[in-house]
Image 1 (spheres, helix red, strand yellow):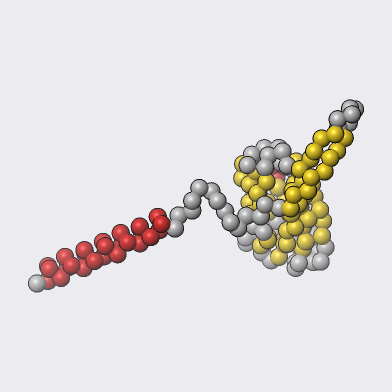
Image 2: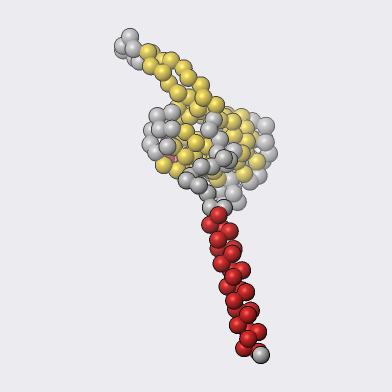
Amino acid sequence: MNNTLIAIIVVVVLAIGGFFLFQNKGVAPVDDFDPGSDPGTIVNTTMPVPGSDVVETVVIKEFSVDAAPFSFSPSTMTVNKGDTVRITLKNTKGTHDLKIDEFNATTRILNAGETQTITFLANKTGTFDYYCSVGNHRAMGMVGKLIVR
Ligand SMILES: [Cu+2]
């Protein structure tokens, strides 16, 4: 009698476990689609190429990033390789900066209410952290991802 009861419990537990495993598979992300990622505002400008008559089109992706203790919003930005990326950091509270080591992109440390715009060329693909270098803010969650496709 006892063994039968134990057997039933084991079967039920396995069934529930299997069900949840299946459920988790069902909600796994499809491809790398990220609906929360900010694609930026696209600004196309034409610029003369120095020393020639050629005028080329430059794709600028503009982002407005809010800094707060201890997060960036948006926390993910996606651009294409070759895009010029323009980030306007708006500090809402505390003192913060924004750095992306791989592109030598950095703002100064901003006080609450200050903004600063930085521009850089996304000349390599990958996923790069942008973070706040003040104190332990990065460890506290002031880090986001720049995805360059
Ligand atoms: Cu910070």
